[in-house]
Length: 299
Ligand SMILES: Nc1ncnc2c1ncn2[C@@H]1O[C@H](COP(=O)(O)OP(=O)(O)OP(=O)(O)O)[C@@H](O)[C@H]1O
Image (cartoon, rainbow, N blue to C red; front, side):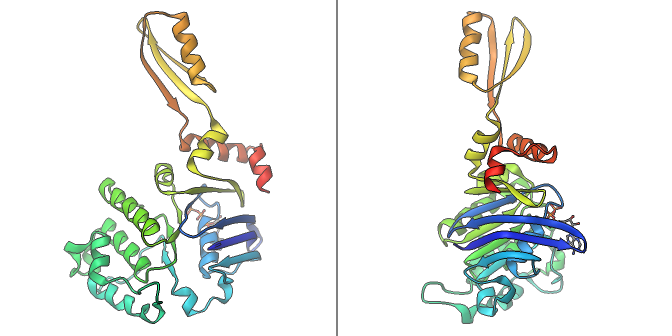
């Protein structure tokens, strides 16, 4: 396993934030960690990166306890934090070239390190800005640079904390392609946090939902959408009137609808529950104290 977390606990002062978090991530997996604001996603990631010491629990990242990870271990990790780094006076190419040199001693027969600077700049879509000062980049361009800094050492494991915040739709799509390339071609394992459910659905092989200090759901986007909500919304117009009905079995409902009304039904739409519906239902159920069977099984 690339990441192994068992019974992870974290307390800030007298406040418990993580109550026993359990999950794993395998090689080449893209895992999205979702959860409401303040759920403890950044805390979890910072513990995995070795930036923060947990209060208790078993954590292994690339087989090493992050609390004692050395430079060679750190060189195999890539990190994209939420906030910008203050490298404003540097130029894009200069900075990436400079940072890349740090990783050169950690190249292996299987993995050349670092990324070729110009290839990296092209990969993140900053070719036209390579010789600009970082302070002159737009927010989205700076975020692309953050991603470039995170992957310059061709990490085995990449952490992305809300990587697309501030991206326009075009940059977002480019970024999604980049994540697919990094996991498919470079075999990188990627753990990302996001509040964009459509993004999680598109990118992640597996989704973890963190709420109340525990993982309350763990599965593929498809499994989560099916297992938890499972309801569909059927909309139609009959004799000029618009109708909406929520059902567990849309096929049977539509069959009955046409049996009842041989004519006059139009504008029929069937909408399966989305990952967003599922996520909201899960978190709401959790917050109201109704643990799902799955959640109980995960404890
Ligand atoms: N250094 C700290 N000292 C005390 N409390 C902290 C510290 N860092 C985070 N917290 C608290 O721990 C909880 C979890 O914070 P964290 O940043 O991990 O959440 P998050 O899930 O990443 O949230 P968001 O989605 O808003 O980024 C919050 O209630 C926060 O106030």
